[in-house]
Length: 240
Image (tube, rainbow, N blue to C red; front, side, top):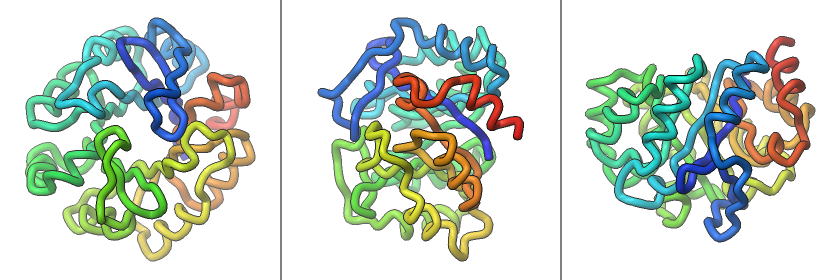
């Protein structure tokens, strides 16, 4: 299971929200690159970067932050937030993202995402399946939908998209543990699914539980910044 620290960005600064509420913003670093270098220095390999300004806007906003992290570290970066048009996707790749997470566009413009799958391949794209009460949310979690998360994932699995980040919004930033029941249900009878957990991960035991449940990756954000899990502990877990 990949251990994936997260850096969420607003106005070029590393922040965390609680349950996707932009009013709950707490700034943890004025320069996200400083955090990225700490992760790399601890021999962590992966990084999840989210442009929160882009997520609720019309396109990528914090591209320079991505460029600086990618050009000054060797981290394998997946990037999301503001991927609304083909130009956004191509800009993210050219700025150093190894993979791009597609959330809102998957909800609002399925044909566009399917065209990206055909052009770029499934290895470079991740489906962002953010859910509240089992229903998919979009636009930086500010808009609901009538799509159930399991059916949403299956729609894109049928197109070959097998990598999925699933965030239970009710858990995000709450430090109350991940949605194990949701993840177990999604993994049942979906052997091809590479499911990455996000939201609520607080302890090393949470990581062990996710690994036992069959998750392919775990994204950890607030627990790092609030000192619940140290970077060194994450690195050691990744080496077990």
